[in-house]
Image (cartoon, rainbow over all chains, first blue to last red):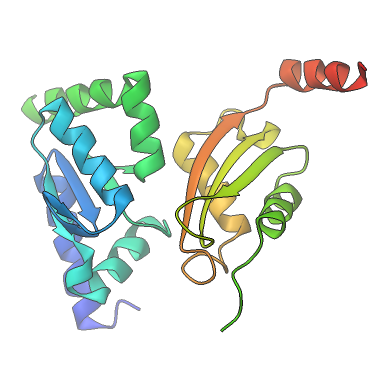
Length: 115
Length: 92
């Protein structure tokens, strides 16, 4: 699988995405222009929290989605990373937001990043 | 083009993969967008990511095909809850 240079390139890009940003979202659509309700809901949650986050649109090239799912073994999009850690999809982020766990996770990752 | 998989078939799949689980399956915005509430004893001590992975595994061949989406709500079913439910089921 990793013999494919394009896949290898994307695997490296994903490492940069998730480790170089506090919150990173692989979504269907761009920021403020979600093409799917689940991706939209995740972006709305981060907007409501007023936190900075970056989005990569997997619809740009099918290989991005393939590389992301290869990285996490997670079948669906969106996929959310906080502090380089895979957090889950839309349902998990929504549930964590409702319980307040999401805000705590972001704060913890922020402290670790600043330490 | 084959019809999409039925709600019952999805429920049976999840129940077979997680014996003793309480499973509710429905659809939203069309017949290929599924949602499921799964409460299983196997979820005890597992993170949400692990719990969702276990449900996805039960329907992995359907996801992306007949199943366009699967919205999930999962919860661990503890021994106390299983017992209480067993009692409730016995009551008329």
